[in-house]
Image 1 (cartoon, one colour):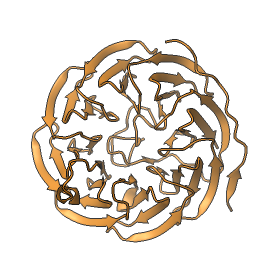
Image 2: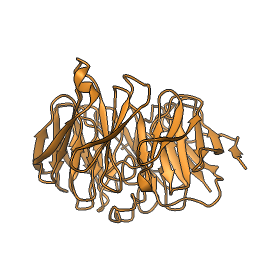
Image 3: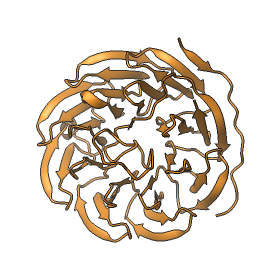
Image 4: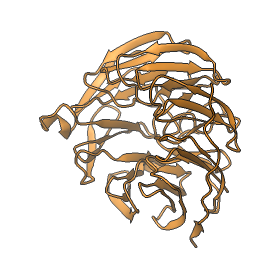
Amino acid sequence: MMIVATVVVAFGVPPVGAASAPDLPSYGRSPWPMLGGDPGHTGFSPHRPAVPAWTLHCSFATGSRVFHPPVISSDGAMYFGNEAGWVYRLDRDCGVVWSRLVAGPVVSLAIARDGTVVVPSGDGTVYALDPDGDIRWTFAANGFVEPPVIVPGGTIYLASHDGYLYALDQAGTELWRFFAGGHVSWPAVAADGSVYVAPVGGLVYALSRDGSLRWTATTGCSGLGTSFCEHRPYVGNDGTVYVSADDGLIYSFGRDGELRWTYDTGMVNSEAGLALASGGRVFIGSHTGEVVALNGDGEELWTYDASGSLGAPALGGNQWVFAGDASGKLTVLDRTGQERFFFHALGIIRWGVSIDRDGSVAFGTYDGVVYSLRT
């Protein structure tokens, strides 16, 4: 049976004024502390309802594009930013706890175990805010900073378009930096502390937690004759590294850098978003409007045709696949690729959802609205 949500309500006005994948340690008590849910960007949550039925609980309009879903704190508060440079904390009912304007667009942010909110802004400044929205410290990179990653030990990883990966401690002090060259997409961190970065141009770097180089690998982007070929790394719960690249391929690498398999998405110059389940299964959200499920050997299990271009899916346990698309439709599929629920928002859903411990989901849209759906 498929369940459909047909009522869309948006309310609230922008104020004027100031968990993890199965093998990762418990990330405090935050069910979704960063983009992708954990340091490996698996998009996996162990929390999922038995029945795929969500209703609109609340929504909040910011007036400017929201690129990624909110992160969720241990008390259910939602933190997110928008293109206008506002950072918001909302309570579980979409009420504004505080807001703060920073210098430049806010794409995504992350919550540390002690409640610190790490916020990169469009001008390269990274703000650390306390749970009340006050500034604890700032850090300046020399280029746009991608969504941050914070590991359970407290180390903060920042990848910048200035070509560096930075490692900071909880006080914002730089521990080390690694020059990868070109602009660097987000890092991904495995349970053993290995850090993976993939700058434009075709190289993939594996680093130890102290920033020393372990190995390098190449993708097909290295032969395209262009310096602008983006990569995004992900790490599965078994330590397998996946890279989605602008050459249209998904690459699977072993822990030691050996190439295991590739999968051709047919999308050159538009890297796909991934979610990683137990057993090595990979779910792809493509800009051609398909959700694709692969087994651990990179073989296609099923495809689902969505209503528009997709970002990365999210996974509610090993049971539900959440996919948001450019038409504003949020679709929930079961493990066989059958549509079981959908909800229509009013704007483009650029990325997937964040998942709370009660199975509630939240997401943002390009028309500046954040939605919270509950079971």
